[in-house]
Image 1 (cartoon, rainbow, N blue to C red):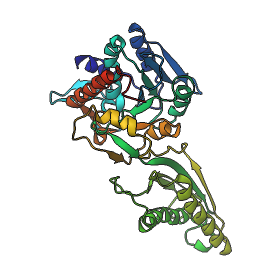
Image 2 (cartoon, rainbow, N blue to C red):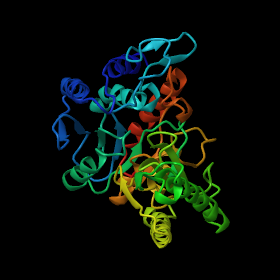
Image 3 (tube, rainbow, N blue to C red):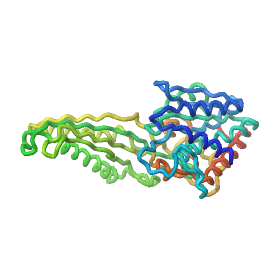
Image 4 (tube, rainbow, N blue to C red):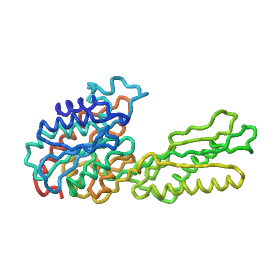
Length: 390
């Protein structure tokens, strides 16, 4: 366990906020693995300032397990931290504090801490490491990692994405898409409302429609009680517009998201919004009011993870977890759906609670790190036997 904490201390010290490069951390991991005789491959970002990393421990053989984690973290700006976010702090309360301890450098540290044992073990199936960039801004880096892995490493390995799940197996997640809608109206003096078109008023109708769409989905029975929010959710998080209180606003812009159940799709949900925009534009035009409504995606849709085609990887996990562990579904997005979309059996399983992620004074319980290491040790032992996976 002390070794995992030492590795975590190194990982936290790298400021890998998504707006920054992760190459210093990648170089550290490459060096760490090289000292153990494990080679790694970078899969670079298009801009060349970030990289994914893929490595294999054990034989070049079918089956095995890919342990996947993202290296980036969310910003700390504006958060009331009690100490330096990029210096690991032992609070003396059984918790380790620092940005990324929970989401998700704790998992990566546990994986790296196990590599020395795996290198010496008589593994019959490989253990792959896959560390990505820019997960926090829309799972941007994983697709190129997954493509490279599937085409050059393995088509039969099973995947464990180590997001914080309190070491409980997660078999389903929602998909997610972020969007920005811009409304352009026509300015006029606010005393002459018949001469202009308020972009804010139009945007307000769109925002209301977004919320009403969510309610309509529930009324239609599109519900999955496995999720703590058991339906596709639509949410407007930012809005900005207008110049002055006595000017009809020419422009209003809002950013929103669709988090869809695995049984729904982004396209079908967004189609309702698009149709309403077109209807509203026609209605306003008929009244002599000009309006232009455009919506752009802020990320490629992150696919959901469906509870299917996961029996072998789920069995591997449950065979080496406490008997009380049961299946869960989560509303947050991860890279798991992207792995599943490539045809790889995938679950989410990692140390720490999602409740601590993205918070000031983010922390992970030391007991969670121990539980993760214990699981990884047992998993490694299972991979010394040919029949465990695949």
